[in-house]
Length: 409
Image 1 (tube, rainbow, N blue to C red):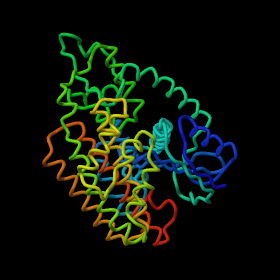
Image 2 (spheres, rainbow, N blue to C red):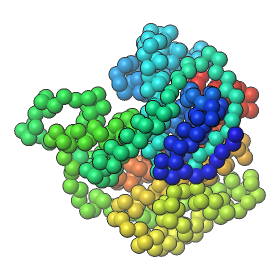
Image 3 (cartoon, rainbow, N blue to C red):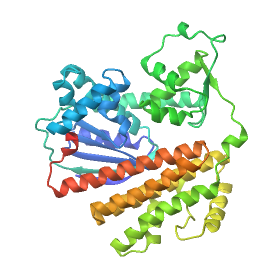
């Protein structure tokens, strides 16, 4: 069976349930902008889940929950590379974790990735039947019905949480000891970690990215901390919300897109403008509307005028519009890089990545701190990380490595 298309709302859970009910064996790939995950099924059972996010890796989760130290993780990674084995096996060999703990966290990792992806409102999916070589692999069997029910519960609860935490761009600060004695509060592990990251400058989105927890857990932790009187929303000044120049955002991404499309057009024989228009079709509706009249070959003045026109039709504040624009332009870069990778030599892709990385360095060094600056840097880094993975995967395929060779890295 081969399936592909767009999904919206809870339709993704239906797709997953269909594949499990039909006892399929193969790989389901799901993307939402620059985010992505792959679900590996064997006879209707979910046996492995992979995320595009570095934060979702097994080692990161074990370190987050203080099961292993950073020093132990680095030593285990070195052993895994030296012996060409999976990280989990190296951790057990070094006696940093028991086999039972490894199984527990392997399952926990898969569940967290799936729960996170089931929250995506829109995106694309692609399923293909494939025989999986699982010899010697640590298999995690997940109950699809349990996952779907738990995901539905979380989605319902999230609707309550977001009535208090209305956007991921809110900033929270700790309330002084005179207001609330922290020792009177019984922290859960996630609340303890989230509380430690609140400093009066980080947005909710930045806390999610830094905490290594998926979105629902962070929102629930923040809700508990707010309800207990330990934190409160920080009132931001208007200039903090709109300080980042729209022209600079467009300049950054125009340069990046031109770097990519120059090579893509040359290798594909199709004009760059056509590729950009195709990339727009891959975006969620709100992002597509913001960048609808953006042209990579237009001047900054013309593009700025087009974006401002789109802003007038978008019923949100300027700060939110800037973030939506960044998401849209970031999505264009991700799509264009994914189309370029199969067409060019590995060394040329790394040259493209390096050029874009220099653009990010320029933003980091010369722009004043702002929500937009942090988002550009973090989101573009995620796109480049995904591209590097794609390049490495393509190279591994040429070397005729197995489907699960990525687990040996």
